[in-house]
Amino acid sequence: MAFESKLGAPNGVNAEFRRRRLAAFCAGIAVLFLILCDGAFPAQTSVSHGVLPAGRELTDEVGRKIQIPQEVDRVVSLAPNLTEIVFALGDGNHLAGDTDFCDYPAEALQKPHVGGPVNPNLEVVVSLMPDLVLATKSINRRETVNALDHIGLPVYVTDPHSVEEMVASVEHLGNALGAEKSAAMLAEDLRGRLSDLDHRLAGAAPRRVFFVVWTDPLISVGRGTFIADALRRAGGRSVVDTKAEWPHVSLEEIVRLQPEVLVFASAHAGDSQRDIDALRTRPGWKNLAAMQHGNVVVVSDAINRPAPRMVDAIERLARALHPEAFTSRAVPSAGGGTGFSLWGFESARTKSHRLKPVPPRSGDSNPVISTPMIEKACACAR
Image (spheres, helix red, strand yellow):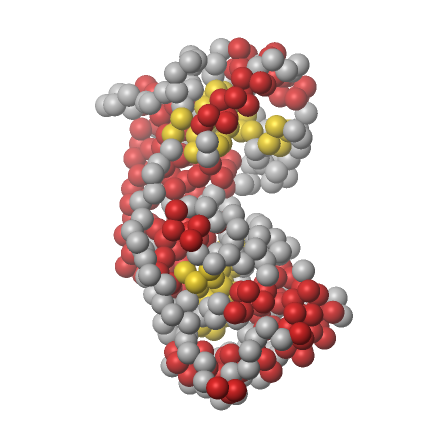
């Protein structure tokens, strides 16, 4: 899947940029309505923005060129990992809104929500007056990006497929948000920690692992996903070797492959322990040697999100799979089992932020966005 459309080029100092772009939103509503309800988007469509001074042009991770103001004051995130990156950059005060699934850090829960990542409420997104919308190709739809594009909102799309590409996304978003220094420091720290892991695990035989995304139906990860790469960085190797990103697999096949270690990700250790205890009694699962010997690792669900906390989860998983490489300090364990059991969770590393206000609107020159016509356009995009 490719994101096709290209944003027309608004230009200008920030106040004028935002004022005229709001007018362009309303001018483009009729065009958006016709295009969306027709069921297709052309490769490039532009809405007239008038003559404006210059902003910045960026190319996102799927090759789209977008125009943003010189300073980005208000951001809307359409994915949990992107929300985490914004806060990790210390830029949470610029986050005007996020999704219903953005639950980390705790401050993210207090932000206005725009719905789910797959079908966000476009009217709410527009009402938050963002200078930039952040999306990711893996969970946000192309139709959502195209619709926001046609309304006149620039959308930066990320597309990481490895841990290193996650770190690169941190740098890219830091550049987009004007937080280059914070992004460079964070990226340097993440790469340093990953390099230390590489050094510690050099020469160690990879553990054969089965990463459980979902138990019913049984879903794992393909070799081209960032989670598979995270397993490799932690000294593991998935027994599932397929091009499919999120393959459905049969339990019979996993019993035949007999992985050394089962890896689960969870936000709540207690819930996972109950689930694993229940699995021990089920046909097939109880025939896995890893389950019989207690070689079960439960790591933070941060490993499921391509954001900086993923490195925390990789470090803890590496300690569980290869404790001999970390003799300086013991690996915390959950108790009640033997083998590789591990519960690894990090507390929020954030500070309080205050959201910058919505730019003021002047009289009737900036019409109200929530008109019946834009409601129809948003409905067509869903």
